[in-house]
Amino acid sequence: MSVTLHLDGDDALAVSNELITFNIHDNSYCAYIKTFSEAWKHCIQKQDKVKQKCACGSYSGVCYAGVKEFVYPVCKEDKVVGFICVSGYKCADYDSYISRVSQKYSIPKENLKAAYKSLKTDIPKSMIDTLIAPLCNMLELAFIKTVTKTNEDMSIIEKVERYLKLNRTHNISSYDLCNYLSCSRSHISHQFKTQTGKSIREYLTELRLEDAKSLLKHSELTVTEIAFSVGFGSSNYFTNVFKKEMGMSPGEYRKQKRNENNI
Image (cartoon, helix red, strand yellow):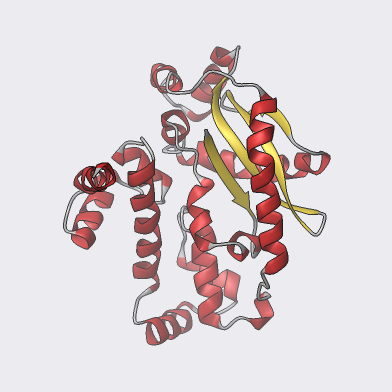
């Protein structure tokens, strides 16, 4: 199954930073749509509505792009703080969804149809319920056992790191960060470089590369799909950065890791 975890704010970091990697649907159709920035923004905006609907319990439905999903609330002290989504299934009237997405976001319809074929056929919700319920319980227990710092308790460096971790797949501007921290760009940059030895851009790139390495090892997404999914605006730029950091191309890295797993 393709399982993703969607949490907000401090709650996204309370359980484990490693889990943030699992907020990307690892199917070619969703990855292709997200290469179009306006469509991706729409995906993100819809997440708030999904979380609100979760307050009434788990449910199944079809997203705006025609992908059937099974959604389960993640709770913290009886409050819904996010959701688990089992996605990547075809719906019966997918052609109408594809037509709307193609027209609204100027995405070639034939490309959408080709990518849609990567989705799976439906499986019974009762089967997914049995598998996902324990995961929801474990996450709720993790929240109970974890004490999360409030924004007031954090240093400026911790605030920067938290903001970058939560927004690393987005196109983050200096204005966004300065507005969030209510500090000047020069002050933030100086403090961050002094205490971490890295520039903000270098730190952000490291986060994205860690996500990319995980997807290269565990998903079937193409290098281009991974590049856009983790926040790089260009596949070529991603490949160059990856090769400089790892000493090999993304494709070579994927092949090496899979060979290691087969030993």
